[in-house]
Image 1 (spheres, one colour):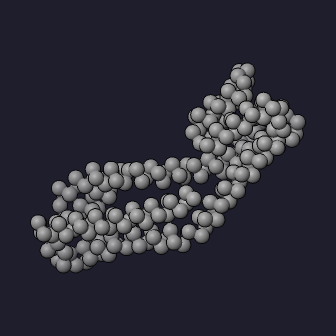
Image 2 (cartoon, rainbow, N blue to C red):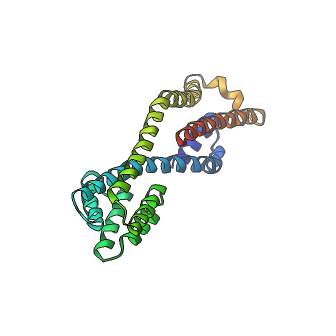
Image 3 (tube, rainbow, N blue to C red):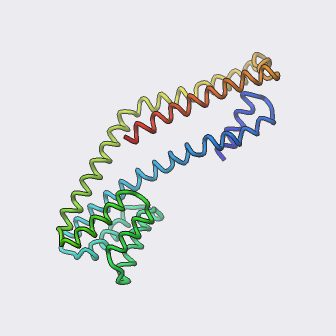
Length: 230
């Protein structure tokens, strides 16, 4: 849908031709992976915050004297009170609780949960609990260590996001400005742009401008994305 809307806008602004709607194909191929990465990054950030809460609830339940299996069930019930219905983490923790109630081993249930979520933190929890149970370790200590590690990681990301907020906003504004200016000129003084809509020279010039604009936009977004991944 976004690719179609952008293709329609570019076809009108840069080419003034319905044939340019064929741009939807390259725009989709170029924009699709970028949008998917941004969507996955947002999902991951939501997961980290929820998983941090889940670990804290586990630690609290273990400190209150619950067994490991019961602690996971209690943490899932409490997580359901603060997490929106339908979230991937809540669904996975409920499945884990169901497996525990069906007498499936906790280690196996955690491995399945980690596989369903697909995040390193969940895999680390499964490995951690398996190791702790084999050695008879202190569950609270292991879980507290994991919670502190995840909390530090989230805090670092939030600090980075706050420091980059101004630059990210500036990059968004600078990305929109060329289109806004072209849109304004097209509406108020379209005659000035007519030579640029006459093929073949006009088409070549506008294609170069569009390619340069998209390249700079994706480069700016990639820089911000890479910095946030650190």
